[in-house]
Image 1 (cartoon, rainbow, N blue to C red):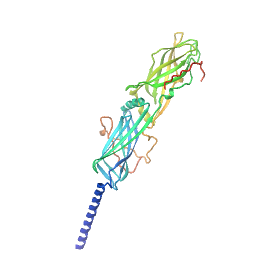
Image 2: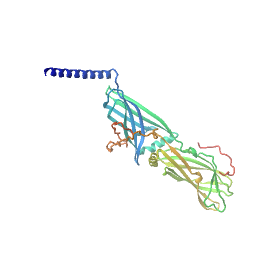
Image 3: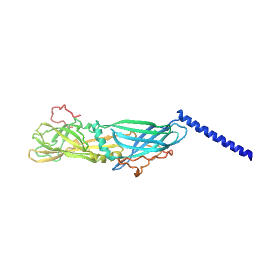
Image 4: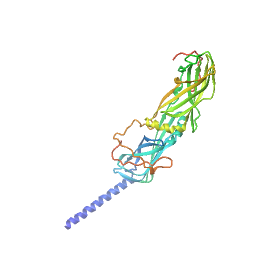
Length: 370
């Protein structure tokens, strides 16, 4: 019995000694830089659920732990932000993370307030229909003294929303019930042009012009040109000109009109854009009121001028990606909401699962708007 007791004590002393050596070795390794602090290796964002008020942004943060053991990072803070043309779209952070050795993917979810969309839209148009998407992630850790690691990703998103409206295509305008003194086509549209006007916080104007030819003998008086703008069937603008134009018989006149997008409607459009996989069908419809020589006025739908354009974006360059094994990202608790409409993201434990006829010839007009 005495020998067994002595042997047990010896084993205990050996175990304690080995543990002490291991602790000392790890401490020395940290001290001499053999082991290191975690760093951010990559960040990936995608849009999740969207409703009338908020848009979910799902984030996968890849953190590299260079140490041979997993660690609980009680003294580590991870923060990240998503900006579009320096407009803050989402931000979040987390303190105290548990990561395995090597690369670990930490999923987060943050809610973006859709009220930021009109501000971003103004910046996008003002910047020539270009948006710089900036994603910044920062890890601050105190396990080896205060250290900070940053990773920034940037990509540019471009659109051409009104460019195709600039056209020299000749189009007929026919009245449903032409007057006795005229016959269809009652007008020809020889050219169309468009450019963005001065954008404000409330309005995005589109300055348009039409070269209109009157093939009849009698003059026409155009008293109004009206329009309606829809984006994914969401009405974002409508109105009419107040200027009167006289188009002499056999003559051509340039008609100017300003169509206005109401920016306060754009957060409603944004919801449909994401629900439609970041695709928008833009449609601008026109009509004209024409006063005839008899004094009668007719309303003529300008169906030939209807402008349709498909706008497609891939803001995070991930919309075609899918999680291989169906991992879902948790929804933040309502208690985490911040005053600016964002929420502190919630960490998900890493369990290994991831989830034409030709009109009467007219002199060409060399001026174009774009």
